[in-house]
Image 1 (cartoon, rainbow, N blue to C red):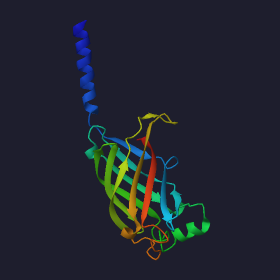
Image 2 (image 1 turned 180 degrees about the horizontal axis):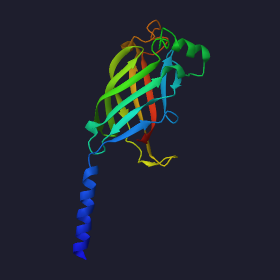
Image 3 (image 1 turned 180 degrees about the vertical axis):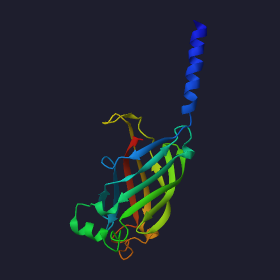
Image 4 (image 1 turned 120 degrees about the vertical axis):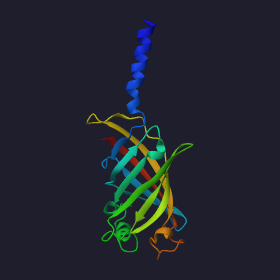
Length: 192
């Protein structure tokens, strides 16, 4: 009996070896993913907005985060701050310039494990200007069965950028609109 148990353990270990280090490709679910941003107005209040229709993929190597990668696209036409005039201004030439640059993109260059999750280094492009940023990402939720039976997971990531680094809204002084903009993206991912 001991030999049978030992053999089953060895066979189980051998079957697990191919899965070790294999990547998992996950697709961003645009229906259940949202990017939000916030900035200070007149240094007295925080204005928040969101963007939907986020698309992209995450390559996830559970045993080797240094091989992970992220590529995401945000649809700037969906910007919503709950004020039509402000939304029109943000979509105009002074900010996102949606007619010329309808998307924001992020492409990771490296990922490393951090104390409370992951640091995702990459290039963020807003209105034609690309700058390096670091996203602080929480660990992904344990995968579970989605509505279509496929594995799903989720996570949140945040970063703070300076709009001056992106030549974004330069005619608006920092006394009116803060230079720092906090961005949070809440992702739901479906395994391919």
